[in-house]
Image 1 (cartoon, helix red, strand yellow):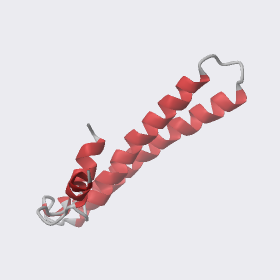
Image 2 (tube, one colour):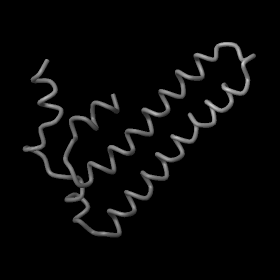
Image 3 (cartoon, rainbow, N blue to C red):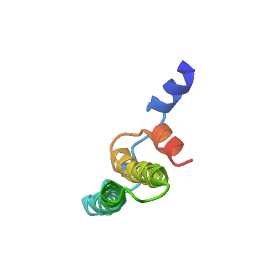
Length: 99
Protein backbone atom coordinates (compact mmCIF):
# COMPACT_ATOMS: atom_id res chain seq x y z
CA UNK A 1 0.00 0.00 0.00
CA UNK A 2 2.82 2.38 0.87
CA UNK A 3 4.47 1.71 -2.50
CA UNK A 4 1.29 2.86 -4.23
CA UNK A 5 1.45 6.24 -2.50
CA UNK A 6 5.17 6.54 -3.15
CA UNK A 7 4.51 5.98 -6.85
CA UNK A 8 1.80 8.65 -6.86
CA UNK A 9 4.09 11.21 -5.27
CA UNK A 10 7.29 10.30 -7.12
CA UNK A 11 8.42 13.22 -9.27
CA UNK A 12 11.99 12.14 -10.02
CA UNK A 13 11.35 10.60 -13.43
CA UNK A 14 9.16 13.36 -14.84
CA UNK A 15 9.44 16.97 -15.93
CA UNK A 16 6.81 19.63 -15.29
CA UNK A 17 4.31 20.27 -18.06
CA UNK A 18 5.73 23.76 -18.58
CA UNK A 19 8.69 22.21 -20.39
CA UNK A 20 6.33 20.97 -23.11
CA UNK A 21 5.18 24.57 -23.50
CA UNK A 22 8.83 25.71 -23.73
CA UNK A 23 8.21 27.87 -20.66
CA UNK A 24 6.62 30.49 -22.91
CA UNK A 25 4.87 32.86 -20.48
CA UNK A 26 1.94 33.44 -22.83
CA UNK A 27 1.25 29.73 -23.15
CA UNK A 28 1.74 29.05 -19.46
CA UNK A 29 -0.67 31.78 -18.42
CA UNK A 30 -3.16 30.77 -21.10
CA UNK A 31 -3.27 27.29 -19.57
CA UNK A 32 -3.45 28.71 -16.03
CA UNK A 33 -6.23 31.15 -16.90
CA UNK A 34 -8.32 28.63 -18.82
CA UNK A 35 -7.97 25.92 -16.16
CA UNK A 36 -8.74 28.45 -13.42
CA UNK A 37 -11.89 29.61 -15.22
CA UNK A 38 -13.01 26.04 -15.79
CA UNK A 39 -12.33 25.17 -12.14
CA UNK A 40 -14.28 28.24 -11.01
CA UNK A 41 -17.20 27.17 -13.20
CA UNK A 42 -17.06 23.67 -11.75
CA UNK A 43 -16.95 25.03 -8.19
CA UNK A 44 -19.92 27.34 -8.79
CA UNK A 45 -22.21 24.43 -9.66
CA UNK A 46 -21.95 22.78 -6.20
CA UNK A 47 -22.43 26.19 -4.59
CA UNK A 48 -25.66 26.70 -6.53
CA UNK A 49 -26.83 23.17 -5.77
CA UNK A 50 -26.14 23.54 -2.07
CA UNK A 51 -28.09 26.81 -1.95
CA UNK A 52 -30.96 25.18 -3.82
CA UNK A 53 -31.13 22.09 -1.59
CA UNK A 54 -30.71 24.11 1.61
CA UNK A 55 -33.58 26.45 0.78
CA UNK A 56 -35.89 23.74 -0.49
CA UNK A 57 -36.42 21.11 2.21
CA UNK A 58 -39.27 19.59 0.18
CA UNK A 59 -36.89 18.31 -2.51
CA UNK A 60 -36.98 14.55 -2.75
CA UNK A 61 -33.62 12.79 -2.97
CA UNK A 62 -31.67 15.76 -1.60
CA UNK A 63 -28.77 13.40 -0.94
CA UNK A 64 -28.47 12.93 -4.68
CA UNK A 65 -27.88 16.65 -5.15
CA UNK A 66 -25.18 16.55 -2.47
CA UNK A 67 -23.55 13.52 -4.11
CA UNK A 68 -23.56 15.26 -7.48
CA UNK A 69 -22.11 18.39 -5.88
CA UNK A 70 -19.28 16.32 -4.44
CA UNK A 71 -18.62 14.74 -7.84
CA UNK A 72 -18.55 18.12 -9.60
CA UNK A 73 -16.19 19.47 -6.93
CA UNK A 74 -13.83 16.57 -7.69
CA UNK A 75 -14.02 17.43 -11.39
CA UNK A 76 -13.02 21.02 -10.63
CA UNK A 77 -10.16 19.79 -8.49
CA UNK A 78 -8.64 18.02 -11.51
CA UNK A 79 -8.29 21.40 -13.21
CA UNK A 80 -6.55 22.80 -10.14
CA UNK A 81 -4.15 19.85 -10.35
CA UNK A 82 -3.55 20.68 -14.02
CA UNK A 83 -2.42 24.13 -12.96
CA UNK A 84 -0.05 22.71 -10.34
CA UNK A 85 1.32 20.20 -12.86
CA UNK A 86 2.62 23.05 -14.98
CA UNK A 87 5.34 23.59 -12.38
CA UNK A 88 5.38 20.40 -10.27
CA UNK A 89 5.38 17.02 -12.04
CA UNK A 90 2.71 15.28 -9.95
CA UNK A 91 1.39 13.27 -12.87
CA UNK A 92 0.65 10.26 -10.68
CA UNK A 93 -1.89 12.21 -8.65
CA UNK A 94 -3.27 14.07 -11.66
CA UNK A 95 -3.73 10.93 -13.76
CA UNK A 96 -5.29 8.93 -10.95
CA UNK A 97 -7.81 11.71 -10.34
CA UNK A 98 -9.03 11.57 -13.94
CA UNK A 99 -9.78 7.84 -13.98
